[in-house]
Image (cartoon, rainbow, N blue to C red; front, side):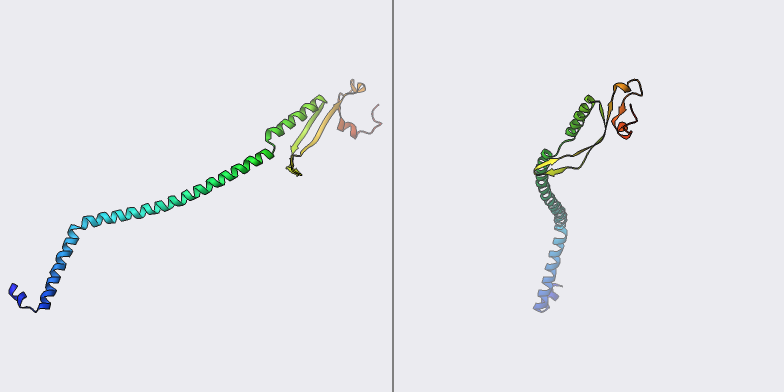
Length: 163
């Protein structure tokens, strides 16, 4: 067999030698480096997953910084507005003071309703509607009769009906 190869022309011998070298190289590459190639493939997949997570984390970090800045600006704005607006307990204190004054004057506050805020120059105002204020008036002539008569009831009666 070696004699047949020696008797071949040189370019056929070269082709045969290159073919054998290629076969030898491919078999070593396939069997020896297959474990290393598998490790590289797994690492490349991990790299792709980690790069995607990295990009998502970068975007989230950027959004967090935007939200922190927005939160800080809204907090400052809230604090400024909180100073300007009356709190609910202030409205409650106004109602309590009104009821105390009405009680001292023998009156009853029937309806108390705050309205929308209004601005007068640089002052914010909170109008309050006091729709019904009922007062009882005791006259000496009425003591023996039906008792106290509300002011509203007296206004509706003709002036000559009593006394």
